[in-house]
Image (cartoon, rainbow over all chains, first blue to last red):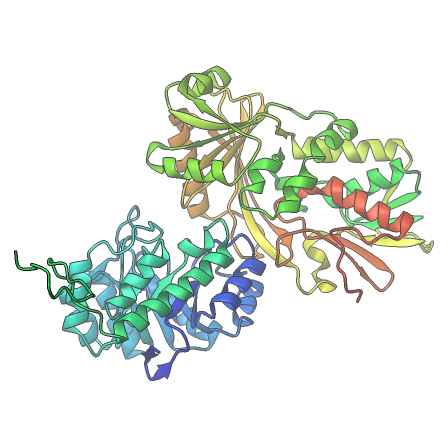
Length: 254
Length: 325
């Protein structure tokens, strides 16, 4: 099971809490999936979301507040400070959005904000790209977790750059890395876990499914299967067919 | 005598239903007329059970279907022009998903859309038409319910009269949170535009992954744009971001909206229970009718009928809590 900033989490599935048809369905999705972490957005609900936040706290799941919707370092830092007070946690999923349409992270602002927040004692989970240099900088400024995207937020496109993700995993084998955003199907989640990532974080794929509770369960199963497969050391793919029954006595070299 | 607290859509609908069934009713509200203090004042007024069924629980569609006739009977002014659901080209996948998850529609091509809404000619290649849906003007409907109740001699007081009622019904919306701890507010923001250049005959819903929009024609070149859904009980003024999002979506639908006058902005918090379905709940001797969420006009008639059935025959209706506090 993944360990973030010294805390072991009971499941490699992390779920967002936005866009569900109702809080009752949200709660059921968490119950069925046994997700290990719930992410919560502060930005839009600022000032009046206490009942909703209390309900999220009541799920009994560890909470990771985020800075979703922040476009500047200042906004993100302020939102993180607010989150620390509201949820009584030093964990913060740091999002600094650089592009309004694709919601891709502003990696420059991200590094700046991460530096400020780690110096203030936050334990930062930065939402980043799979770029090795950016990830390296984030670790330099004190992040001990990385959260590269699979694809743009809410797109459901899956793992857009498998090469880049494998490369990231290989370069930082000892850093907990969570594939965040872009997961649309259980196969995407399983794929990320098969690559050896420590967890996946998703929201829209479950919340906007026709049956969010069933999809939450499917994602939990996929994450478990993907992790088990990684730990089982999968075979290497090869071009030549390799029959699993003996072919002795046949002209197999012909 | 039955005393009803609250003259929002729930209170007035209850009073109308109970009066029609021959009960003596008294309404009580510190603001004794519908107005901007109540969240139903800011509603869209779409009677769209099938479209709402896309994301709402099943009872919303089933009970919502009865609302169209109820409002026509009790207030008149219901426009049965259906609903048109559209998506911008790059979001066409949203239209397929919406079609899959809702009933009561048929797919229209570009020509059929132009025939229904000439102002949208050439702008959309496909759309979903929910022919049997309807809409009304919430402020006119609330005011008319109140007028007809007064005409029937129903008293509307700012404070309860001395007499003890045979039954107290609390329909105060979010204000009843003092007695209903699982009630929460879901913030919604809306705009009213005047754009005489644009003619639309029916509510248009524009599907968008991040900024869904509906536009309801109010007649005389006036349009209501709504509505955000934010997990917050904050009331009062709209935010710049919400105005920006709603207007940009309207502009994407039809650039002519860029010339509109922005007549009004409004925000309020809808009362909702955790499953976003309404509830009748008995606490002591008080019957609470609440949690209509974004379905005030759609579900109030059904909730009122259930409340009346419960009071008259003691049956436990579908929207009633099983556990009595």
